[in-house]
Image (cartoon, rainbow, N blue to C red; front, side, top):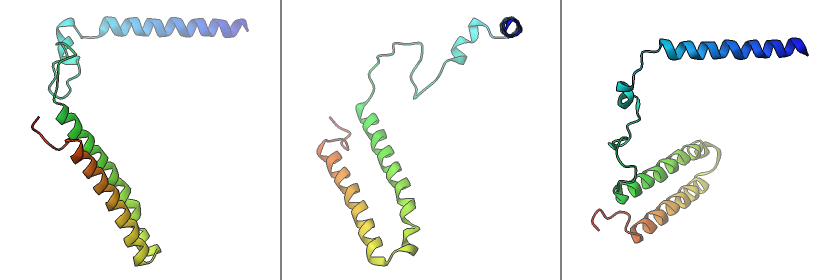
Length: 117
């Protein structure tokens, strides 16, 4: 038990020495802080985080993600064409297209597709 404690203490000392050496030997400076900051969608990370952005941009992004996921759901239907008869495959495809059209109709009713206010 004492040997285990010594090993644990030695491991903590070695890891602390390695972290201290990496801080000392690193070439980063505070002048490069902006270069290391994240850059997303054209927003300046040093400015106010609560700046307004277009809600339509967000909604179009959500619509794209929904249709992208639905396209990914179509791929497992393709091998079904060999396993089931044509009538069942058409029914599955028709049901899937109905779901897509209902989603598009809902987005149209919510004015998500209009770019003007």
